[in-house]
Length: 372
Length: 253
Image 1 (cartoon, chains in turn green, yellow):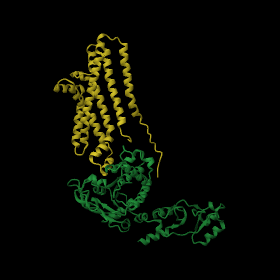
Image 2: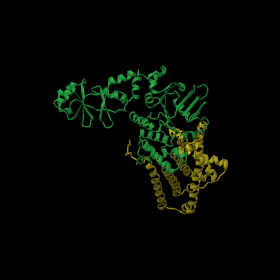
Image 3: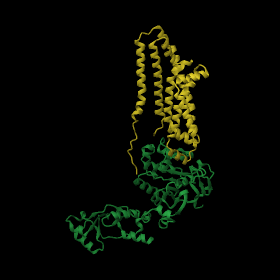
Image 4: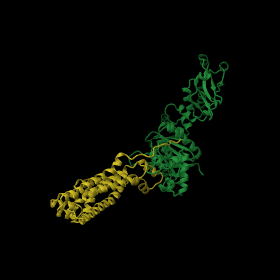
């Protein structure tokens, strides 16, 4: 079993003589189980390339192979039933219930009724939507984010090896998009599908892709590599300008809080006497100590000034800790929290909220330096 | 992450509810008017002869046959043609058809009946064909519009999942266009039932005979009752079409 699942070989697509081809002589390999992101400016032919794979667009020349089999001349409808397809506008069938929408391909493949019903419920659970509530609803009753969950569930219905996604989260508000992206990544860890993902958003590409193909006009590959490699070694000026400024900052989305060494500040466990708190602070090199509750959950940043200025109980002095990081959060999140924090540090806790340590700007800078 | 409490019972909009109420109200009002005329005016022997039950019954039957056959013919022609021209590769045929049929409707129905008469002679078939020619356009136009207003992304998704062109037409496009197509058919049925009152001109029978006799013999009540019956018939079919529209429309839209 080869590692290459999809192979486009010298594929071109032009619309009539005289016009520039949308795709010019493209050779592209997609590895089994990877998320390959096609990213590029609008009009570069990335969507056309995607639609060539399931033959919604027929190539003018070239061959296409899926799992070693030449599918250039295969029956297009049968081919498409084996390939999941998700588009930006979702395209749910408005006259069919959620369950019927999800069941589309299994029905086409002639699955038995009870097998379909079980699969529909399984998929609804998979995309975190309660089957009891949503099974018999119609698409117009869904929000944009919910509709795209169903879009993904529908594409996964017959358990295809390959999933094609054309800007799937492009029309969704930023907060929901972020959540869907995270859920999708979690799902992919479980499912290990081979996914070709089109976006114009380089940040999304970096977040979602195992590999990224940056395309320029005519779907020509400017650079094809892992996000890390592209960020640290852009191939040419086009890639550099497409990455935009702040490639280092973008790189932070690829690393987790668990990648950097945590700094241990002095801690105080509530309840604590003022004198003990002062003593702890004076003995430490840090200007600040962290007040934890009895369960080890961070409560407030305490410094000497806060202790001296007020006669209030310690539990009410200093500044509250508003946001905790967890080890699996990205370093970009960590940077944001640090910049917002009054002490230039961010607390890291485990899932139960127990204090583990702090991230500091210095530790972040050290990591970036070491990457060179 | 689930968001419950979505309001699933949306009330149908006011216009849609009025749609089912207005024609029955008018029909009943007209029926009361007709009965009042029948009861309160002095009906002489001639009027009674014009309005004899056997005649009215026959004319009603003829009107129904004229209206329904021509409508059926229109559906059988316009819907398939509308489907055909909205398939890929017929954009020119489509604009040509819509424009020429638009001309056909610009002619008065009366004129069309006379034109068909001059080619085909008198009889019920002439009337049916003339009425059909007159009401082809609303059904054809609505079939085209109905199919074209189907969200392109829905069709793209359907193709992408491996539905064949035929499956997309039958399972996606037609169900999503049915409401608009039925609106066209409704217009055609009302036109056909209404204008079948002109059928008597070329020996096609129908309730127009009563009106005509009333006119020629100067019997006001007969004219009025004949006209009221035609109007009620058209309103009844309007109501039935509205019902069909409401109940044949797929859920979820």
